[in-house]
Length: 305
Image (cartoon, rainbow, N blue to C red; front, top):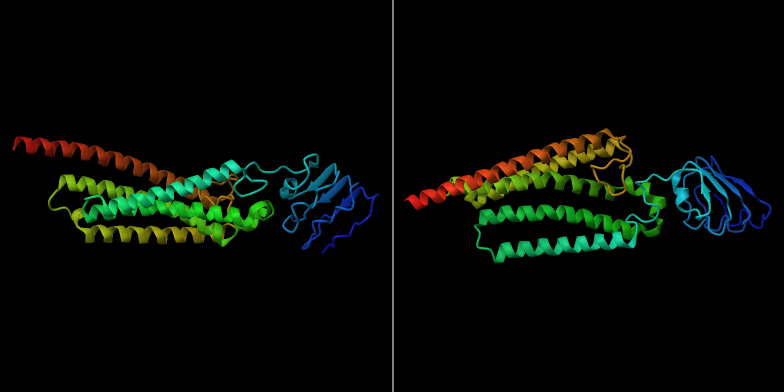
C-alpha cells in the first residue's frame, strides 16, 4: 500500500522503481509532488489499482512497464516502453463519441423495427397463425442480438473512463460471458429460423392442402424444440469456453473474434459457424429456387384447368 504523500517534496527524485511490487492501493496523487521524475519502472506491476490521472503533471521522459495499460494513462510526451495492442481500446469500451452515437442509433433502430414488425404481423397481416408463428420466431431471434448490444452499452456506461484499467476484469466477468452466449445463440438460432421459414413456404406451395406446416401446433412445437436445442447447445459451448479461457480474447465479447489467435475454442466456433452459415445460405437459395419453380407449375396447372 502506498500513501498519497509517499514521495512528497522529493524534488531531486529522478528515477523511481516500483517493479515487482503487488500494489493494491495506489492514490492518484502518488507522483503529483515529484515533478522532476525522469524514469519510472513498473515491471511486473498490475495497472488495475492505478488511477487514470496518476501520471498527470509529470515531465517523465520514460516509463518502463510490462502492462500495456500504463501507456494508456501516461501523458502524450511520455515515452512508454511497451506497445498497446491494436485491438484494445485505450479509453472507453466504445471509443469515440461517433461510435457511441452509432451504437445507440443501431440499438434504437433495431428495437423500433422489430417491435413494429411484430405488431404488423400480429394485428394487420392476414397470414395464417402457423406462418405468423414462424415469422415472429425470426423477429424474436433478432432480439437476441439486440440484447447483446444492450449489454455492451450498459458496460460502456458502467465503466466509462475507467474501462482501460478494468478491461481484463470485464473480459472475465459473467456479463461478458453472457454477451458471448447471446451472440453465439443468435448465430445458431437465426440459421434454424430462416431454414424453417423457407421450408414452410416451400411445403405450402408443393402441398397446399395437406402440409403439416399449415398447422399452428406443429409450427409452434417445431420452433420450440429447435429453440430449446440451440439454447442448450450454446449454453454448453459457453460453459466450455468459460472453463478453457481465463478471459475472453476481445473486449466486445464476440465468440468469432480472437485477435491473438491463441484460443482453440474460438477458432473452432468460428470455423464451425462459418461452415454452417455457408450451408444454410446454399440451402435457402435452393429452396427459394424450388419455390419459384413449383409456384409457376401450380399457376400453369390452374390456367390449364
